[in-house]
Amino acid sequence: MQRSIHWLFALTVLINIAGCGKSDDRLYGKWEGQLNMNWGNFGNENADAGIDDEQREMMEEMRANARERMAERKYVLEFTEDGNWKGKWGEDGGGGMVSIVNGEGTYTITEKNNDGVTLSLWQEFEGESKLKLKYNSDGKLEVVEYDKDDRVEFGKLSKQDAAATK
Image (cartoon, rainbow, N blue to C red; front, side, top):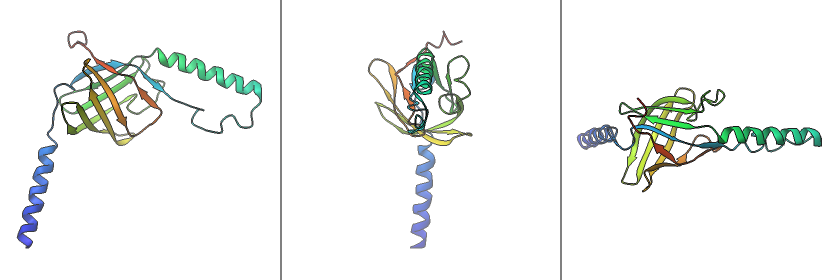
């Protein structure tokens, strides 16, 4: 009985190691598109409580201006064959925000099928997160799920020509 348990454990370890080696040539390279940060009420449902009309109007104008500037920013998400990823939003890196929006780290493909991949991302600042991607028939990459920050709204990403990125 004990010998069977050891064999079962060894088999489980081998299966897990084999699964970590998944790759997907479609993923590698730079993907470019848009994203939006849904700040809502600056992250505080009661942010407007206790302020006068003039202050509220000023806050609403600031939000509108921020959304307009954010809409013009390009987002680039890059995956390399050696298991590294990098994300950058805008030329200035999104105002210091550190996450998938502006960051880098390593990834592992945890699921793969014809429609897409699910990745386990690692970043020192945020730790581990899950990113589920779908390949669309139009050649674009769609973020189906990102479990770390529900404020991030991804648009579809287009693969950049390798010659253009050199």
